[in-house]
Length: 111
Length: 114
Image (tube, rainbow over all chains, first blue to last red; front, side, top):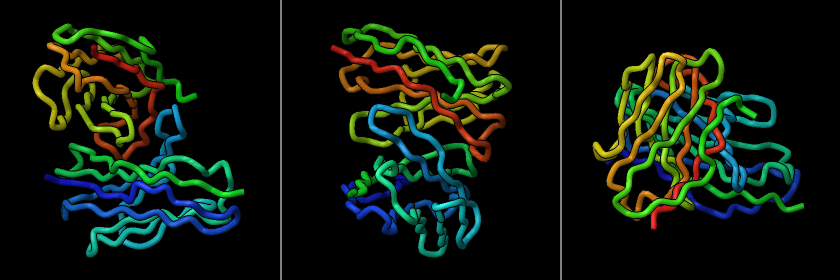
């Protein structure tokens, strides 16, 4: 069974600090990796995607991918209370014909 | 707002019944994916349609079926409802097949099976 694992949290981070969210996946053939944010009672929205090993930065967000370790992470710099949400990691499998989401990590930014 | 709409917002059915959920994609998008999200869980991929053809399917039984219409609106049909089918059903539209183009999610339909 191909899986995507995330710590469910909650992860509590002081305002202004760096929040680090982690995700591991089991399918070595996975090619595309996504981070979604889901506020309570709302639908997921895409924050970032990454396809290649290394770092990808977009504003306060940095996605990191290590295919050898089957590990993808999301860093949020200068965390704001509005970043409090559930963060979902998603990975494509089977040459991109399926996508698997993790259960999500609840992030709480402490004012 | 993503421009993706779903109807109905909420629905209550009894075990054994059939249900049809509807999704209207964002303008210009020819791909739609459907997901089931149980409380406290991540979305589970049901299937994807690209230009009216199924383009990938998750681990859901055949009683979950779908359609995509020429105007790229879509339906999810679930037959012989079970209690475990109670969940939020999300559709997401995107420009191209697969997942390299950004998926835009609708607000979801909350299905309760009694």
